[in-house]
Length: 111
Image (tube, helix red, strand yellow):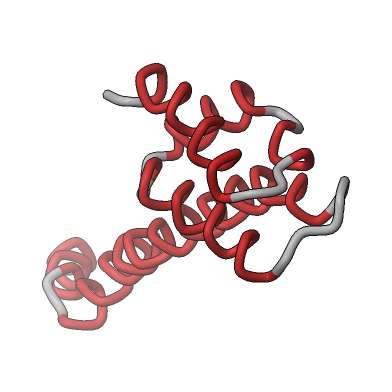
């Protein structure tokens, strides 16, 4: 009789909820973690824009937009670009400088 009661409790809605809840929460948490890592990698790439010679807001935004369009949501591309361009972004003075730096890297960062 005790064994039968255990099996009856196994098929309840509460049991199903307690079983599925951790799985659902984990699946909902993964995109958040991905977005945080993505944001962190982009910040690491953008740090050189804040140092070096004085840059206009327009130039910094241009560089950021070009980098995001080049790498999109690929963690691998962002990491590769970060290693390839290093601190070159700290030396940019014009949009042509940005284009020159990124043009060379487009070939190596492309899938």
